[in-house]
Picture 1 (cartoon, helix red, strand yellow):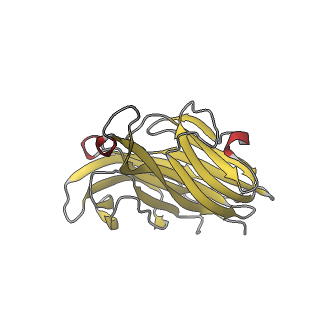
Picture 2 (cartoon, helix red, strand yellow):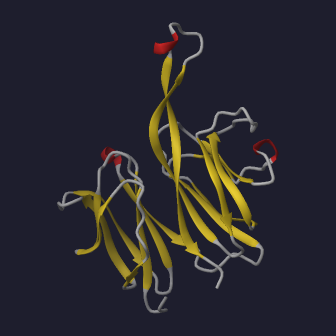
Picture 3 (tube, helix red, strand yellow):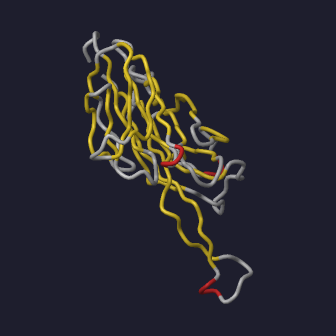
Length: 227
């Protein structure tokens, strides 16, 4: 990245706003960005700019904020919350690879349903019950900051905050095993997943005995890799 420019990417994490367009001052950064999508880094002139998220195909502003971008830095702008309370938040990204033998992972919570969560990276050789949480009690807008852990293969698991980890624990997300190489830096953005139905104990008849359960999905964005 040229040292005289900044880099910015945009994430659409609002579950009900529909597709959005993103603008820097009056210049378009991204168009028709759908829920759960993340752009690549876009080179930007450093200095003060106005970032705006609008409804796709229109200039109806949903969220806007004034930010200052520094030369030689990378940023993530997350358009989140529900359409009625939409917010746009700017985060400074880690550009340098994690130390040798380590990875750096940051968790940002943009889940609008279900309350606070605990987040685990469960190694392929381990179990949830014997894994320390990567982040605890994250609420909407919560940011764990970057946490270094050994490089390897991990499954991302999200549970309601305070859940005792076990094989039978209620899970909002139980992800597939993903391999992370030494030096990898990743931002994980937790977002809403479609509501699912589950049986509601003690109610009969069973076909009608169900309730809506919030669930979570994750966007894993690449911040940096080993050079």
